[in-house]
Amino acid sequence: MAASAPPPTVHIPLTENGRLLRLKEMFASKFGCEPLFYARAPGRVNLIGEHIDYCGYAVLPMAIEQDILAAVQPVDSHVLHLSNTNPSYLDFSLGLNDIQINKTKPLWHSYFLCGLKGIQELFNLDQPKGMNCLVDGTIPPSSGLSSSSALVCCAGLATLTANAKSLSKLELAETCAKCEHYIGTEGGGMDQSISFLAEEGTAKLIEFGPLRATDVKLPHGAVFVIASSCVEMNKAATAHFNIRVVECRLATKILAKSKGLDWKSMMKLGDLQNRLAVTVEDMLGVVEKVLHPEPYTREEICKTLGISLEDLCATVLSQNTQDVSTFKLYQRAKHVYSEAARVLAFKNVCDEAPANAVQLLGDLMNQSHVSCRDMYECSCSELDQLVDICLEIWCYWISSDWSWMGRLHCFDGSCRQAECVPNQRRRYVLQN
Image (cartoon, rainbow, N blue to C red):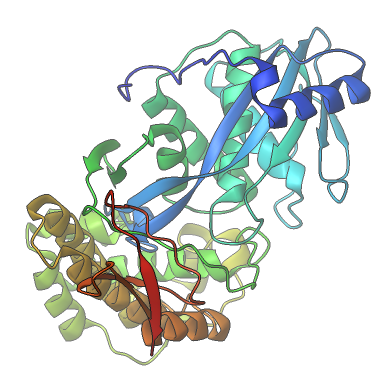
């Protein structure tokens, strides 16, 4: 389905879907009636392009089967009654004429309110439909698979449907990307875009300004293992995410001023590159010449830009970064520009499909992790250890005559070959 079309409505007999049937039964038990419809938004895994969407650069994610699913019954009262199949997430009710979203202590329902509020404001709904809503999620929370953004998207879609409004998938993605800012996270739109624009059997190159999506056909036989480090991170509950956004913004302004540009209007590293009309490789050279590796203090930034500390706090820093004293501009800008180049290289490999495509893609993903670990500092020791294990252990799959056929990354030896050739039996040999 084209991105200019609305999200599809699919009629599924409940008897053929155990999860929907269980959700329907729980909904009826909770609200005393049956849901009118169900809204679904999948999570995502980003293959490459980490933390560059909010800098204006293309990313390359794909959707996953795990999702957020909501059973919904519109009601005439202008009240939201929200429940979750997970008892650890408490029930919540709110009058829809006064939606307040707590940025300092975001709870699970806060993300639902973001999607609801975004649609309500987009259509200027003075008399929005109330909803009885029961949410069920299979995306592990705070795991880096975009459970929060999927909940925002699911809420936006549910609100749109309940109020008999229509948007294209592109418009919905852009709306939900903006309304997630209500919770204080200054994301760039990757999560919401792939949740709405994903299609089965393909990854997507997601570009911004304007938003557009291009199919990326992955090499035949390529298998991606999604493994958890078991470390949770709620990006809205801490300042870590927004600090990186602000550091990229500050790097943009200092680099722009060094080039004699109107730095006050510059917000994204990608916009700066476009304004200078140079390559990302050229921008890496600019970073080396202008920025120093040592952290910048607030005072140094103010002196370099010729502004007061009050101006810095009011016009550049986000609400939850007001007390940050130092910023790593060189490292963040270097990651963004090098990662942007890796995204394009990844797509080129997929398009050209050379014989060693899987190895080339693996090399680019390895480089991406090193940059995330060392330059962007958005990794952790547990994740680094998991990556090391994956790199040290290979799983070789061998045909019945023991001729070498291929290899897969594997971290525990329990691989299953995705593509089976008829009349050949596979054996697996775990090798260090």
